[in-house]
Each structure stands twice: as C-alpha cells, then as structure tokens.
Length: 148
Figure (cartoon, rainbow, N blue to C red):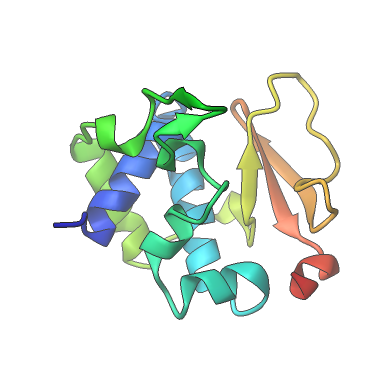
C-alpha cells in the first residue's frame, strides 16, 4: 500500500528540511504545494490536477524521493524517514491551504552550499531568485516557466 498524501508530505518535509526549523520545513511544504496547485507549465501537467505523489516523485526533482543518487545508495530518502508530530503538523498545515507568505509563488529551492544565491534556477532561466531562508535559496517562476 502506498503512502497517503499526508504521509508523503510529512516525509519529504522531514527529509528535505528537517534541520531547518519550522519555517524551513513550512517553506519546503509551500514549494511542494505551489507545484501541486500551479495552473501553467510543467508542474501543472505533472500534478494532473493536484497529485502530490506525482510532484514528489517527478524524476530528478527531490533528492529525498530517490533511493539512488549518482549510482550510489541514498540513505537520506523518504523511505528511511520517521516523521514526528512536528512533520505531520506541517503537512496538515499545508494540506489545509496554508502557505508561508515569504515564499510567495516559489516553485524551486536549493542549498547552494555557498553564501550567495544564484540569480536563476533552474539554470534554464525559468526561475528567478526570490529569497533566502536558512541555507536554502528560493526561486519564483519567470515568464519562461510558462513555456515549460
């Protein structure tokens, strides 16, 4: 039996941002739900009208959704997570329609492992830098995203 949307969201939140505090985890949940609910572009097609599962498991999007990275076992994956009440509460918060206002309509984030965020991400120019929260840079869609 597959994980419920709540379980998937709690696991991806823990795996992707478990060490980033409540706002960091809410930011990740916001990006996931923004992708689920966007009405244009690649993620609108992937979510097929609101599938959290499709968004989380889209090839190459979330390292935590993959059991292997660069042909090596990835021990930090959603299957190895043990969400706690904090993660379920954030999943419930996001599933209830809440979003972290600072994230706006951001569709991407990454940890650049450097003090400065790049101006664009993904590197095809479909996202532009919006804000930094903790170690992660967040990007909102550009007009180019509509064409994806």
